[in-house]
Amino acid sequence: MSKQGHSVTFFEKDAPYYRSHRDLVRPSFYNLELYDDWTEVAPRARAAVAQCDCAMVTSYCPDARPAADVILASRAFSVFYDLDTPVTLDELSRTGEVSYIPAYGLQPFDLVLSYTGGKALAELSRQLGARRVAPLYGSVDPNLHRRVPHDPTYVSDFSYLGTYAADRQSQLEELFLRPARKTPEKKFCIAGALYPADFPWTSNTYFVRHLSPPQHPAFYSSSRMTLNITRGTMAQMGYCPSGRLFEAAACGTPMVSDWWEGLDEFFKPGEEILIARTSEDVLDAIELNDSELHRLSRASLLRALTEHTAAHRAAEMISLIEAGA
Image (cartoon, rainbow, N blue to C red; front, side):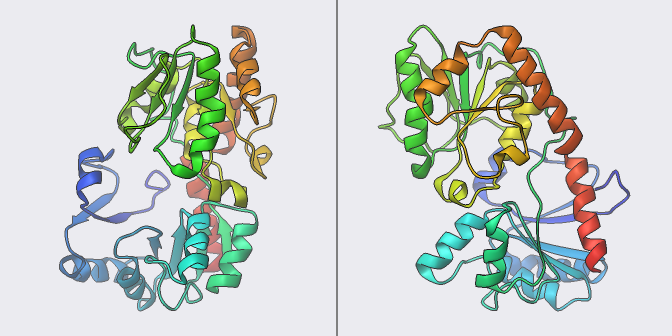
């Protein structure tokens, strides 16, 4: 957005976990306002919103409700961006409220964006009153994610990058751990956080406890193939491409993914991505020769660079805002 001539100020609560893993520490192309307490930063937030054309609050923002009040009390074009729509709707159905959704719902916002498309969009309108909803999917910055030299730490025949989640475990067992047990001569590598002590590791599975964002290109570039697994609530909704898919594609790494409705809208199965429903599908993929994998990775790289970059998404967002302003 900055390259397109827009000025951006981003307010982020200085949470301990993100403090130690922050990927942009001293941004030169936008304003980053770190804060400890909302009451402390609220006057600065109000001043920033009063001077802007568009103001946005996102899901999982710790102070989403008071931030939404500030935005909706201003003259700025108001946007709510739900980066976790299936999680939002699941929580709403179970408890009747979501901590980052205002008590009055999403009806007052001029635009509601969702990281998930498909039927999730209609549910945001039906259950939370959103008047105008559009998808704004994940993306990749090819300046940050691109092919780099192999790193011996991450070299593997098959890899998986993702935080541990209970509702991904059955798929991880079927599509990663079972193939690992059946091919002890291959090297499998998992990178992520929150894996429990009793996780069923195999003798040929290697673990990287936390992989900071700047290391993602080295991880993918060192993987002969990589796996994408979607959380259960996301897969049920469909149209939920993880940013990891676009990162791997931009790094020229062949991808295997579980199936969910709408996946073929982002990458063409069999030509740009391989679909695995069972461990046997993964084993077949692992046995592909280098020329077949190169063809696959070249096709997914081209698709990512022509349709799924951060510049594409920024342009989409500005177009949606201008159409509704």
